[in-house]
Amino acid sequence: MTLKLFIIATVVLAGAVTVASCPPTDREALLAFRSALHEPYLGIFNSWSGYDCCHNWYGVSCDPETRQVADINLRGESEDPIFERAGRTGYMTGTISPAICKLRRLSSIIIADWKGISGEIPTCITSLPFLRILDLIGNKLSGPIPAGIGRLQRLTVLNVADNLISATIPSSLTRISTLTHLDLRNNRISGELPRDFGRLGMLSRALLSRNQFSGTIPSSISNIYRLADLDLSLNRLSGQIPASLGKMAVLSTLNLDGNLISGQIPITLINSAVSILNLSRNALDGEIPDAFGQGSYFTSLDLSYNKLRGPIPKSMAGAAYIGHLDLSHNHLCGRIPGGSPFDHLEASSFVYNDCLCGKPLRAC
Image 1 (cartoon, rainbow, N blue to C red):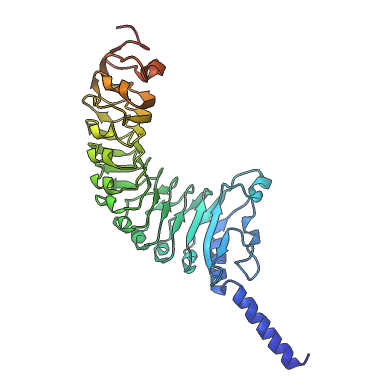
Image 2 (image 1 turned 30 degrees about the horizontal axis):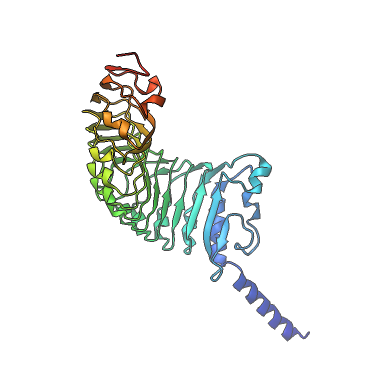
């Protein structure tokens, strides 16, 4: 082969490698992201070598056409062989570098359950136009949710549970019309829930327990037609339960326990789609609505530790099903009805009331 042909072949080959590989800017961004993290036990970053970050770089996936990095999927709890061989879950320290924002085609960022990653969520993440999944559960991230989170108009999953996130929910969050899964559990987020929470029309799960939310429950939540799971437990919410929550078509789990909620139990919740209802450890008063019927189907109904008074409603025996029932620690009085579901319940479901009697308690 002549020198000229050799040079041409080399240039063509180099061009082919460049086309097949990830862009050098993406590779540089990934290496900068990696340099801010320390993973001492599993060696998951050992594969991050070579020029093509689309080929066998652990947790990295690329768009098959553009070869740009599309997904970062790093989970500290996995069934991957690298975890099985080590016989342990993952542990990682360090921070999430803003260099990750240079990966402009990112569709998902999953950096989950590493237990030791700290620092704040880079604000520049809100400038990633294609981001659909942001899952940072199970770390030690602090600071606020970025104020501009509402710019992520393709986001379907926002999960920052089990961190040290503080401040309030950004007002822009309710502009994410595509959001289906919101998980903010077990953080230090305070302030009131946005009054326009109901703008999140595609939401199916809203998990906000174990924070420091105050104020009342926004009635606009009942506008979210697809919402199936709502968990606002273990906060500082006050006021009354919006009756409109009991009119939601697919709401099946409603956890409001461990708040400062007062007023009466809405009748609408008794014959609703809700099958798991936990209103315990609040300041609810009045009587339990005598409105149970064939539309009342509860796998779990917990009204304990409130200020409820009066008798146990006889209509409760006409419910389609009640699995677990807890009425303890109230001011209820009178005879415990017979039949289902009362014939399979233990005394612990009724103790610490003013004057309940009958099985499984003392005879009347």
